Length: 242
Image (tube, rainbow, N blue to C red; front, side):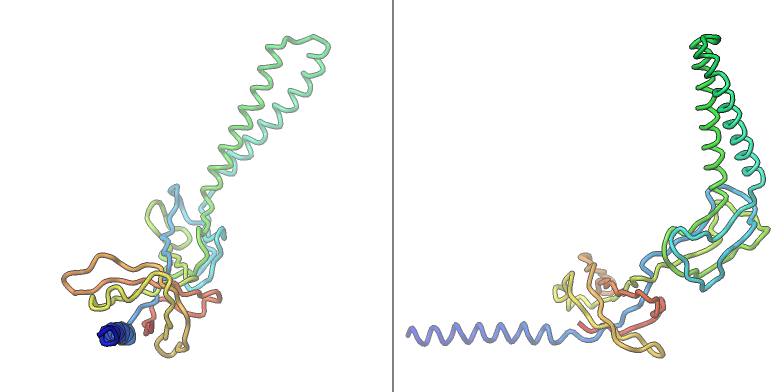
């Protein structure tokens, strides 16, 4: 009786094991889409006229690279004026330092001169910050995917350029609800981009949605695909094999 019980137990365990294995092996190749991991709409913090655009559509850019400059004659003049005031205040302070040591001017007068220097330096810093706003830099490493502005055009809060970060790429997959629970965060999958790119790559699951779309009976999965040389373009279809 004991042996018979163990045989039944082992039979049940074996059946369960093979059922799980068959279920995992039954996950088909799924269709995915390669997408940028970040998309930045470039605009200007201050309104102005474009003087120069330094990049074209398709150009690779680095974080901090200048992509556009606005006309800044007024701001440059303000910086020069503020700088001249700082230099004048410093020269005035040097001249009066000797007089103070000889007690020919009061401590109040000395304090007033030092305050003038501080105010002039603050005005210079403010003018320099306003001038910096006329230079627009990329906030990410990426590729320029759209450029609607041109030299001489007025820009403001509206976007005139789009930059996409493609390293890493996001692989977005829509999975039937029947396979919910079979894909885990951290799991690695093989990515097979469509032709003419082709090849095979490895990506890691970073997001598994826990809300099912009732209308389609599916849930979303996102994988992260390293793309250090930007060899893979975004917008490409692919097969995802877990």
